[in-house]
Every structure is written in C-alpha cells, then in structure tokens.
Length: 432
Image (cartoon, rainbow, N blue to C red; front, side, top):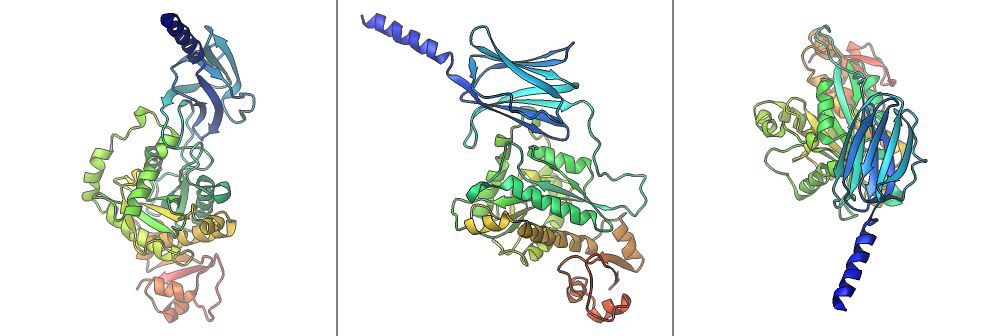
C-alpha cells in the first residue's frame, strides 16, 4: 500500500513538473547596433537556437516550458524582426519563431536568477551593417581638433537602476541629464560630445568603456543617481577609480552596486573583461588617474553650486566602468534618488538642466586650463589667448578668477566697458 502511494505521488510530481517553468514576460529593447529580446522565466530552462533561410527565420526551442506572456504587444518598429509567433512541440517544449526582414547575427544565452532579477533567456540580434561612430578623431585632422567628451548615462533598457519614490527611475533621470550635457558641449567651440547610450537600452560596463575608446574620447564621464539603504542619505558626489580600495564605506557599497548592473542588464561569458589584469598596472604608470582626480575636483566644485555635496572631496572605489587605462574617467552621482526630497528634484527638468550645466562648467574649465596637445584650445592658448563662450550663470568676475587674471585685464582685452554679458558671447582669455 505504501509503495503504491509512493508511485502515485511520484507520478503526480512528474506530470506537474512538466509545466513547472513558465515564460511570464517578454520584453524587447532596440539599441543602435542590435535588438534584444528578453524572456523572463520562473526558473531555469534549456534552449536551442536555430537559424533558417528562405525565408529568413530565427527559431528558439525551449525545453519543458509554457508561454504565459503575450508576444503580440511587442513593438517591432525599427527592428529587423517582422513577426514573432509561438507554438508547442514534442508535447511540452516551446518554439518561438522570429520572421526576419533583415540579416542579423543572433546570439542567445541564459542568465541565472540573482538578487535583482529572476531567470532569463536573452536573444541578441546584432545588425550586420554596423553603424559608424558619430564622433572620432582622425590622424588626417589638423592640430586644431575638438576635445571629445564621452557621456555615459548609467543603466538603461531592462536595468532601470535605482528606483525612487513614485517610481522615478534612475535610467530616465540620468539619460535626460546626459542629453542636456551633450547639447552644451556641442554648442561649445573646441569641444564635441558623443553619447555612449542615446536611448533606453543596456550596454555592458566593458562595452561602455570600449565605445569611449573606439571614439577616441579625451574624457569619459558616467552619470548616475545614488541609492542607499538609509533614505536620509543625500548629496551629490564625484568618483574616480581606486587601485587600492574604496575611500569610504559608502563608496565601496556604491561601487559594488553599480558593478552588479551587468547581472541585471545581462552579459554573456564572452563579455568578461580580459583587460582588467593589465589595467591597474597601466594606471600606476600613467597620468590617467591623476588627471581623473583633478578633473573630478573641478566638476565637484561646480556641482557644489547646485546641490549639497555628500563628500567634499573626490572619492575613489573600484568602479568597473571607470577602468580605462588611457582615458581619464569620472563618475558623477547627481544625488540620492532613494531620498524622497532629492528624488523630487532629480525628476524635474529644471534641476536636471542645472546639474548638467554644473558638470559642463567643471569639465570645460579643466580643459580650458589644460587643453590636450593637438586641439584647437591648445592652439589658441599658444597664440596668446584662448576663446571662452559665455554659459548660463557665468559672471565676468567668476571667469577672471577661474583663469587667474584680473577683472580689469579681462574687460580691457575684450573691449568691455560694463559688467553685462550674454549667453553665447565669446571672450578671449589672455595668457597670464
């Protein structure tokens, strides 16, 4: 009797477990060079990727799983996918078929559940015609090139980053600040900006650094919004890479949290960084880290005019996104989105613009004083002066103090008789 009962129970468990794993949601993200489709699962599942031609189709066969999500709601506009359909095969396996309108290089991989997300199956469809980078230095250029600022909006796509009260999402706030910052540099003579993430999609931490390097950036600045366990935590911060450990407990906590973004955004094993072993040694032999710290201090002093500072000095921690051996890199935490008061400010366009202007002034001030060789600003400095474009919030006395010249000399050199200036007006800064 006991044996019979045991067999009945085992049989019931076998039948019920056939549908134990489900696809409970499907999401699609479009990036400049690929389309990502994410299948959210209630547990791990085995899958197989098949590519078919005439007509062009991509097939995902997922074992022992049931589809509970809707595929018809996915927005396929501006993607190479024309239609997605599903069916059941071999009794309890799921087949997903993508009818393609363009040739792609498909890659699929599974992500195990972690503290921030459940099990997922990721399908990346890489465009075969790679888009050309929008900004890049060239050896054919004259010695008057623009200074290139790579602006990285943290998180994105399926990784919302930190969530504030009222579902304010870090990825949205920082993208807005990044776009404003990019526009400011594009309006500056001698500067050019390039957006690492220009829309709502995820890029791996290594991928962000690689894009900055491919576009030959002179600076990499990553924009974020803090979250902490205590809602009372507040204030903006600027970080640089540390090769020896974090400068504070909060910096260590934040670095670990930001470095875990790839667990949510999803990267394959092939995305693991094979450069990290040599990066720290390279940094100790170059001036990259020193420049990052000094430039970061310039940004911090300008951010102090807009927001309360969490720390009065540039902090350091092992941020993976900052580990470029040849590009000065800083990370700006624009405030604590987990703090109800700061979250409200971060969600407003006025505060986002003020923060972008502060970051812009700090970066611009540094490069005006320390222009890289071969740039227009370096050439202007050698000619006996450099050009400065008036930005919102500037005053003549502030500009004179910034460049260590007297207010009288600045006004005399530019034939200015009053203190009235206009945004966009150009000044020539005489060599001190």
